[in-house]
Amino acid sequence: MKNQRKIIWIEDNPKFNDTEREFMDKYLSFKNMTLIVWQEPVEKSDRGIECLKFLNKQIEWAKSSPEEIAGFILDVRIPVDDLDMLGLPVIETTTGLYTGLAVAYYYIINKMNNSPLGNLFAKHHILFFSIAPGLGMEFPWIRQPPCDYIEKGTSNWKSELGAWFDNLL
Image (cartoon, rainbow, N blue to C red; front, top):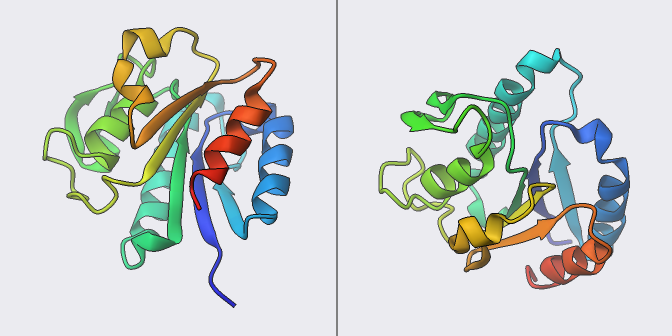
């Protein structure tokens, strides 16, 4: 049997996203994909750092077989000040307001050609899944391939998320 492809979800509050997680797990099981999400309980002040550690661990695992990663789902707001932990010390995140965007732009997609990953994951699908409204207007690139944006809590988030998963095949 072929290995299951993985979706890496970076979310600093996974316990508040049980409905979303349940939907993703069920939907992906029918697509022979697995959701990998950080869910360790830590102090509130350490959530952002632990998220980036989790991402770094997943990336290290995936470097030897990047084709097994179907895509990334990133929360936009993750409380960290910079991307030093990912090897990009000069990239600030506006005190966590735009961490997910910075992770995608500088680390995964490598737009400034200084990511320690090089272009290994630059073409992988990235979904920004967040409650942050209006991001598409402020950052139009988040709706251009390989990126997309779905706002949590809207009436059609499930159908939009299902369509995004379908496009990964």
